Length: 634
Image 1 (cartoon, rainbow, N blue to C red):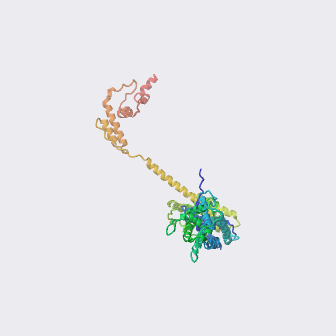
Image 2 (image 1 turned 180 degrees about the horizontal axis):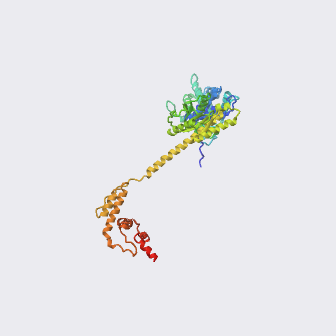
Image 3 (image 1 turned 90 degrees about the vertical axis):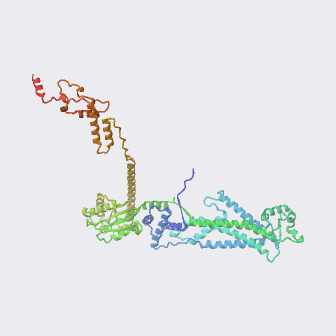
């Protein structure tokens, strides 16, 4: 099972600097800033409202960091910090120049005069060391060596990295304040960048050392005659091994451009240092010097320059892409709050035409806590004038919040305040996505009744009940900054919930409309006309063709009339059964005509026998009533 990937964002180094500096302002506890939780929540509100709910996490954190630093600067704090360590920057060129000088002097010290030692220990030590470094770096790249924190954490690199971090922190840090907290976090965040700089300096130093050796070899060819030879304690009596070594190293350089072929065994034995004075003509060191310089370039200079270029690219990439984990409670809390605050759009405050001294100041603070200045506006409506219209509300891409300002110094009245609430509610219903709430301003009322908290509570409950009775959610504005910010947060949370409810209602309405359209019956095709075989069939066919709603009863009557006429022709009157004695003969005057009897007969369900109508036999007629009475008397 793979590991779950932790949420993270990639930002530039400058953005990371702003975010970490803002974090230090909020979490360091610097008393000179007097930073409170209300200030942090206000910054989150303004950033969320400025960017909206579709903003990415990196944009949200960066914008909020700018707002935090701006608020700290307004309180007199200096938010400019330097992150370029001067001491390490000065040591890097010194190290590179020192490596060059050391390489230029190393071969001259190790080699005797007038002799270019083909087995020079400094030369081959540099070659072997660089080959070993390449192998170790390859194993580190594969993950075989190194740690998870620092994959290329070689001993020399780790030592120089620790030195640079300590030197940089000692020159940039402060003993106290939010900047000290910033540099403590910044040193951990910029540690990969420091390691990359150290690695690049080491690669450039290796190149400088190799160039110093090459310079030493070039200088030897001017003004002084040098011979090529070799000397060794362990290989003095083994020229075959020396020839094999020369073929496997210098022989890799092709014999082009005037370079001679590699010497044979006898020539290699003659190149031993103690045999050179006895030769008639000592071999020139020129071709060997060229091979040594080319070998140094191929093994040291070019690979090291390539590695330095890779480190430079990684440094540039780090400046563009710094990874910050969002699992940190600081970042996760900010993003969760901003996601909730960003669901809403503009705040539209509708105030009364009555002048109040503290109203403008209080509303300005509410608008500032809501977000940017352009994200809120205030308009005046005359509550006392029934004909005064509601200020025009322009639809917004996000949810608009209409806030009706109510003065707690007044008592709620049905003919003024209730009418104003009704107007605003109608405006909110006519504006797509708008929600409306009430704001009771207790600033002036609280100033007048400071010593009477029960009076303030009573007035607050009175307005709350009045607003609830007219279908409005009520919010209370007090002089306290913390309570004011809490009110704005509660307003945004309520409005966001209302926006979600409206969206779900709209989606349900659209789904119901789509379902109703999908379930609507398709129009039936008109049936073909039946052939004219009989009168009933023709009548039924004509009734089937007339299938409009108004013609349905008429078609039914036509079909019944056709069936009745058909039964008349089939069933004669004499075929009707004789009535029993003492009962009246059925006929047209008995209550049912032949057409009606036929209709009842035809309309009975198949397989069911109609119940006999015994009303005529049970109830004697008016003519038989005296005879029945005389019989009863006898």
